[in-house]
Length: 302
Ligand SMILES: [Zn+2]
Image 1 (cartoon, rainbow, N blue to C red):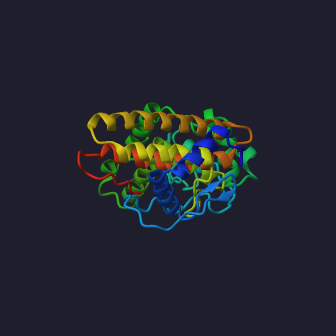
Image 2: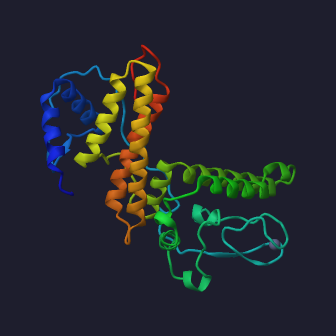
Image 3: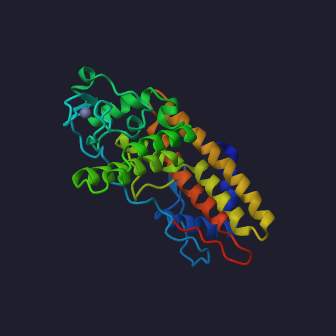
């Protein structure tokens, strides 16, 4: 764990002394499902009841990943209609225009042509994970920095090629179009969202966020606690606008941190995971701020 600046430690001591903020630590600790850790030692958190309406604020269950199993990678395939050799991510076939199955192990970056797959002879002995990691090394911020507008236009172009409406009444081809369309949707929504993009990258590195992971970096924990308190104390639209603005700033800083962590050589996965968990909390706060109404209690629900 990195050392904590003295100012943060002083801030934390003041925090423990304040009953309002103590309640907050308690709810955070409960939400994180374990004692809040400071500098490696757990705070002993008292068990009085809290009116804070923070509920189930933990990490989502790990998603099923194409990278969960180590398998040999296939970077090329043969078009069953015209026998052309194609990159694994290609469909429809550029030669004969028929739809060709896309292996589910193709990375989302390769799917949208953001990363060039290595030549087949280079990839012959690599696993899916190794191949995806090779792709990420070519990309800014290790794949975390993305131009979402560019991604969207790539997505729309690919969707045009396999739109199920174009294959109505064609039996298995229609099913294949549906399957590819939903694969593209999933890939696009994963990469377009800064949080799910970070989660996806962590999966590629075999280090996904699990239910038991929590934010144990004191400085990052302070950030999210402060952000939540600002929102809890907001009583006017103007207050909420200020919260949105400062939370937006925190989100941008966290994303910059993620780009630096994923872009490091080798990627700093411990840091990236902590920042991804922080981003998860900040995104929940962003949603709560958006749904805020005068007189309504703040509910931050995962
Ligand atoms: Zn073909």
